[in-house]
Image (cartoon, rainbow, N blue to C red; front, side, top):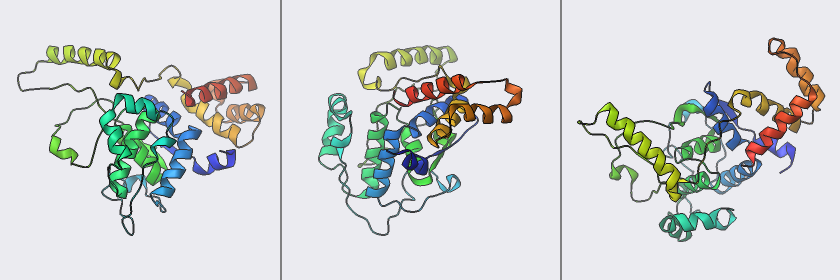
Length: 258
Protein backbone atom coordinates (compact mmCIF):
# COMPACT_ATOMS: atom_id res chain seq x y z
CA UNK A 1 0.00 0.00 0.00
CA UNK A 2 1.11 3.57 -0.62
CA UNK A 3 2.11 5.73 2.33
CA UNK A 4 -0.90 7.99 1.87
CA UNK A 5 -3.19 4.93 2.08
CA UNK A 6 -1.50 3.77 5.28
CA UNK A 7 -1.81 7.24 6.80
CA UNK A 8 -5.52 7.30 5.96
CA UNK A 9 -6.05 3.92 7.63
CA UNK A 10 -3.89 4.56 10.71
CA UNK A 11 -5.38 3.11 13.91
CA UNK A 12 -5.19 4.97 17.21
CA UNK A 13 -3.72 3.08 20.20
CA UNK A 14 -4.93 4.17 23.64
CA UNK A 15 -3.35 2.54 26.71
CA UNK A 16 -0.94 3.43 29.50
CA UNK A 17 0.37 -0.16 29.63
CA UNK A 18 3.58 -0.30 27.58
CA UNK A 19 3.38 -4.04 26.91
CA UNK A 20 -0.22 -3.79 25.69
CA UNK A 21 0.76 -0.72 23.63
CA UNK A 22 3.57 -2.59 21.89
CA UNK A 23 1.57 -5.73 21.17
CA UNK A 24 -1.41 -3.80 19.79
CA UNK A 25 0.63 -1.19 17.91
CA UNK A 26 2.79 -3.63 15.97
CA UNK A 27 -0.39 -5.40 14.86
CA UNK A 28 -2.45 -2.41 13.77
CA UNK A 29 0.52 -0.66 12.11
CA UNK A 30 1.42 -3.69 10.00
CA UNK A 31 0.77 -2.63 6.36
CA UNK A 32 -0.55 -6.10 5.53
CA UNK A 33 -2.99 -5.88 8.46
CA UNK A 34 -4.18 -2.44 7.32
CA UNK A 35 -4.71 -3.86 3.85
CA UNK A 36 -6.82 -6.67 5.35
CA UNK A 37 -8.70 -4.14 7.47
CA UNK A 38 -9.65 -2.12 4.41
CA UNK A 39 -10.79 -5.29 2.63
CA UNK A 40 -12.90 -6.44 5.59
CA UNK A 41 -14.60 -3.08 6.00
CA UNK A 42 -15.53 -3.25 2.34
CA UNK A 43 -16.74 -6.86 2.33
CA UNK A 44 -18.75 -6.45 5.55
CA UNK A 45 -20.12 -3.06 4.49
CA UNK A 46 -18.76 -1.19 7.51
CA UNK A 47 -19.33 2.47 6.70
CA UNK A 48 -19.66 4.42 9.97
CA UNK A 49 -17.12 4.25 12.80
CA UNK A 50 -18.10 3.71 16.41
CA UNK A 51 -16.39 5.44 19.30
CA UNK A 52 -14.44 3.17 21.65
CA UNK A 53 -16.98 4.09 24.35
CA UNK A 54 -19.80 2.68 22.19
CA UNK A 55 -17.96 -0.56 21.48
CA UNK A 56 -19.01 -3.15 24.05
CA UNK A 57 -17.50 -6.31 22.59
CA UNK A 58 -18.60 -9.06 20.25
CA UNK A 59 -20.71 -8.31 17.19
CA UNK A 60 -24.19 -7.91 18.71
CA UNK A 61 -24.19 -4.20 17.87
CA UNK A 62 -23.19 -4.88 14.25
CA UNK A 63 -26.47 -4.40 12.42
CA UNK A 64 -26.09 -4.03 8.64
CA UNK A 65 -29.09 -2.38 7.01
CA UNK A 66 -29.86 -5.81 5.58
CA UNK A 67 -28.20 -9.14 6.28
CA UNK A 68 -26.10 -10.56 3.48
CA UNK A 69 -23.85 -13.51 2.83
CA UNK A 70 -20.09 -13.21 3.16
CA UNK A 71 -17.72 -15.77 1.68
CA UNK A 72 -14.47 -15.81 3.65
CA UNK A 73 -11.62 -15.60 1.11
CA UNK A 74 -9.38 -18.06 2.95
CA UNK A 75 -6.95 -18.38 0.04
CA UNK A 76 -6.02 -14.71 0.46
CA UNK A 77 -4.46 -15.52 3.83
CA UNK A 78 -0.75 -16.32 3.59
CA UNK A 79 -0.74 -18.75 6.54
CA UNK A 80 -3.91 -20.62 5.59
CA UNK A 81 -2.03 -23.88 4.92
CA UNK A 82 -0.58 -23.81 8.44
CA UNK A 83 -4.06 -23.09 9.76
CA UNK A 84 -5.42 -26.07 7.84
CA UNK A 85 -2.70 -28.35 9.26
CA UNK A 86 -3.20 -27.30 12.88
CA UNK A 87 -6.97 -26.78 12.89
CA UNK A 88 -8.50 -29.03 10.21
CA UNK A 89 -12.06 -28.83 11.60
CA UNK A 90 -12.06 -25.04 11.70
CA UNK A 91 -10.55 -24.95 8.21
CA UNK A 92 -13.33 -27.14 6.84
CA UNK A 93 -15.87 -24.86 8.49
CA UNK A 94 -14.30 -21.85 6.78
CA UNK A 95 -14.03 -23.63 3.43
CA UNK A 96 -17.68 -24.64 3.57
CA UNK A 97 -18.73 -21.11 4.48
CA UNK A 98 -18.90 -21.48 8.25
CA UNK A 99 -21.76 -19.03 8.61
CA UNK A 100 -23.16 -17.55 5.41
CA UNK A 101 -24.26 -14.34 7.10
CA UNK A 102 -22.14 -11.34 7.92
CA UNK A 103 -22.04 -11.43 11.72
CA UNK A 104 -21.19 -15.13 11.94
CA UNK A 105 -18.56 -14.90 9.22
CA UNK A 106 -16.94 -11.95 10.94
CA UNK A 107 -16.53 -13.89 14.18
CA UNK A 108 -14.79 -16.67 12.27
CA UNK A 109 -12.66 -14.29 10.24
CA UNK A 110 -11.37 -12.31 13.23
CA UNK A 111 -10.10 -15.60 14.67
CA UNK A 112 -8.44 -16.36 11.35
CA UNK A 113 -6.81 -12.93 11.49
CA UNK A 114 -5.43 -13.73 14.94
CA UNK A 115 -3.73 -16.77 13.48
CA UNK A 116 -2.57 -14.93 10.36
CA UNK A 117 -0.84 -12.25 12.45
CA UNK A 118 0.32 -14.60 15.23
CA UNK A 119 -1.81 -13.09 17.97
CA UNK A 120 -3.56 -14.93 20.84
CA UNK A 121 -7.30 -15.61 20.81
CA UNK A 122 -8.28 -12.48 22.79
CA UNK A 123 -6.97 -10.26 19.99
CA UNK A 124 -10.18 -11.01 18.07
CA UNK A 125 -11.83 -8.25 20.12
CA UNK A 126 -8.91 -5.88 19.50
CA UNK A 127 -9.27 -6.55 15.77
CA UNK A 128 -13.00 -5.83 15.96
CA UNK A 129 -12.22 -2.51 17.67
CA UNK A 130 -9.87 -1.63 14.82
CA UNK A 131 -12.51 -2.56 12.23
CA UNK A 132 -15.42 -0.70 13.78
CA UNK A 133 -13.74 2.13 15.73
CA UNK A 134 -10.52 2.93 13.91
CA UNK A 135 -8.85 2.82 17.33
CA UNK A 136 -8.01 0.26 20.02
CA UNK A 137 -7.54 0.32 23.78
CA UNK A 138 -6.66 -2.21 26.45
CA UNK A 139 -10.21 -2.92 27.63
CA UNK A 140 -10.11 -6.29 25.85
CA UNK A 141 -6.35 -6.84 26.11
CA UNK A 142 -6.62 -9.61 28.70
CA UNK A 143 -3.54 -11.81 28.57
CA UNK A 144 -4.42 -13.23 31.98
CA UNK A 145 -7.77 -13.45 33.69
CA UNK A 146 -10.39 -15.60 35.36
CA UNK A 147 -13.86 -16.47 34.06
CA UNK A 148 -16.38 -19.26 33.99
CA UNK A 149 -16.35 -21.00 30.60
CA UNK A 150 -19.68 -22.52 29.64
CA UNK A 151 -19.78 -24.33 26.31
CA UNK A 152 -23.30 -22.99 25.75
CA UNK A 153 -21.88 -19.46 25.77
CA UNK A 154 -20.08 -20.09 22.50
CA UNK A 155 -23.21 -20.81 20.50
CA UNK A 156 -23.49 -23.17 17.56
CA UNK A 157 -22.05 -20.77 15.00
CA UNK A 158 -18.80 -19.76 16.70
CA UNK A 159 -15.34 -21.17 16.95
CA UNK A 160 -12.30 -19.85 18.75
CA UNK A 161 -8.61 -20.54 18.59
CA UNK A 162 -7.39 -22.87 21.36
CA UNK A 163 -6.10 -21.43 24.61
CA UNK A 164 -4.33 -22.73 27.69
CA UNK A 165 -6.57 -22.51 30.74
CA UNK A 166 -6.18 -23.19 34.47
CA UNK A 167 -9.13 -24.95 36.04
CA UNK A 168 -9.91 -23.88 39.61
CA UNK A 169 -12.19 -25.56 42.16
CA UNK A 170 -13.17 -24.60 45.73
CA UNK A 171 -10.36 -26.85 47.03
CA UNK A 172 -7.64 -25.28 44.87
CA UNK A 173 -4.73 -23.79 46.81
CA UNK A 174 -2.51 -20.89 45.87
CA UNK A 175 0.45 -23.25 45.54
CA UNK A 176 -1.54 -25.56 43.29
CA UNK A 177 -2.53 -22.66 41.04
CA UNK A 178 1.11 -21.57 40.80
CA UNK A 179 2.06 -25.12 39.80
CA UNK A 180 -0.75 -25.18 37.24
CA UNK A 181 0.54 -21.89 35.81
CA UNK A 182 3.94 -23.51 35.31
CA UNK A 183 2.28 -26.44 33.55
CA UNK A 184 0.22 -24.08 31.37
CA UNK A 185 3.35 -22.23 30.25
CA UNK A 186 4.97 -25.54 29.36
CA UNK A 187 1.90 -26.47 27.31
CA UNK A 188 2.11 -23.16 25.44
CA UNK A 189 5.69 -23.98 24.48
CA UNK A 190 5.08 -27.66 23.65
CA UNK A 191 1.63 -27.81 22.02
CA UNK A 192 1.94 -26.93 18.34
CA UNK A 193 -1.65 -25.66 18.31
CA UNK A 194 -0.59 -22.90 20.71
CA UNK A 195 2.76 -22.12 19.10
CA UNK A 196 1.38 -19.61 16.58
CA UNK A 197 1.84 -16.79 19.10
CA UNK A 198 5.13 -15.68 20.64
CA UNK A 199 5.25 -12.29 22.41
CA UNK A 200 7.87 -9.65 21.63
CA UNK A 201 8.90 -7.64 24.69
CA UNK A 202 12.48 -6.58 23.97
CA UNK A 203 11.79 -2.99 22.85
CA UNK A 204 8.87 -2.14 25.09
CA UNK A 205 10.62 0.77 26.83
CA UNK A 206 11.12 2.61 23.53
CA UNK A 207 8.07 1.44 21.62
CA UNK A 208 6.07 4.68 21.82
CA UNK A 209 8.79 6.86 20.34
CA UNK A 210 9.68 4.24 17.72
CA UNK A 211 6.06 4.17 16.61
CA UNK A 212 5.85 7.96 16.44
CA UNK A 213 9.05 8.15 14.40
CA UNK A 214 7.76 5.44 12.04
CA UNK A 215 4.57 7.37 11.26
CA UNK A 216 6.43 10.67 10.95
CA UNK A 217 8.72 9.01 8.43
CA UNK A 218 5.68 7.80 6.44
CA UNK A 219 4.57 11.41 6.23
CA UNK A 220 7.79 12.12 4.34
CA UNK A 221 9.79 13.83 7.08
CA UNK A 222 13.56 13.34 7.11
CA UNK A 223 15.28 11.52 9.94
CA UNK A 224 17.04 14.75 10.90
CA UNK A 225 13.79 16.74 11.15
CA UNK A 226 12.15 13.97 13.16
CA UNK A 227 15.10 14.03 15.58
CA UNK A 228 14.96 17.84 15.86
CA UNK A 229 11.21 17.82 16.54
CA UNK A 230 11.60 15.09 19.15
CA UNK A 231 14.36 16.95 21.01
CA UNK A 232 12.39 20.21 20.98
CA UNK A 233 9.43 18.47 22.65
CA UNK A 234 11.37 16.09 24.91
CA UNK A 235 14.41 18.05 26.02
CA UNK A 236 14.34 16.30 29.39
CA UNK A 237 15.11 12.97 27.68
CA UNK A 238 18.46 14.10 26.31
CA UNK A 239 19.73 14.72 22.82
CA UNK A 240 19.21 12.31 19.94
CA UNK A 241 20.43 12.38 16.35
CA UNK A 242 19.13 11.21 13.03
CA UNK A 243 21.03 7.91 13.31
CA UNK A 244 19.09 7.00 16.45
CA UNK A 245 15.82 7.81 14.68
CA UNK A 246 16.89 5.74 11.67
CA UNK A 247 17.68 2.76 13.92
CA UNK A 248 14.38 3.20 15.78
CA UNK A 249 12.34 3.25 12.57
CA UNK A 250 14.25 0.22 11.27
CA UNK A 251 13.60 -1.65 14.53
CA UNK A 252 9.90 -0.83 14.35
CA UNK A 253 9.66 -2.03 10.74
CA UNK A 254 11.30 -5.29 11.82
CA UNK A 255 8.69 -5.72 14.56
CA UNK A 256 5.90 -5.13 12.06
CA UNK A 257 7.23 -7.85 9.79
CA UNK A 258 7.43 -10.56 12.48
